[in-house]
Length: 125
Image (cartoon, rainbow, N blue to C red; front, side):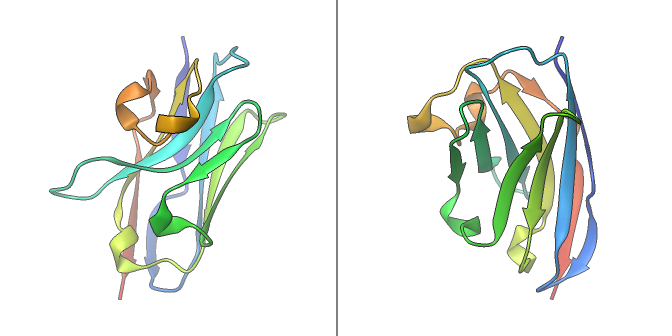
């Protein structure tokens, strides 16, 4: 059973930074992927950043150049470093994992099998 637990959310002013963490247990796959997704009130969940087990990364256009996804294998922890935050980044952020990676729909939340509970990020102007 794969379990994911996020932390690191909070409130920050526009232009600030936050780092989200996701501790992952039970993940034994080698051709899968992990990623960060977010959902703002009244909006559909969207993919933010994905890291494949092979090392490739995918970012949503809205966060390219501002967010960085990474993983510490020794700590079994996935990170999302968020810089130059904007009010429109306000959302519930969740990490997710799946046993299989597909580069053409990596940011499609519907294909992910395992999810954390989420952590709230609020950016004020």
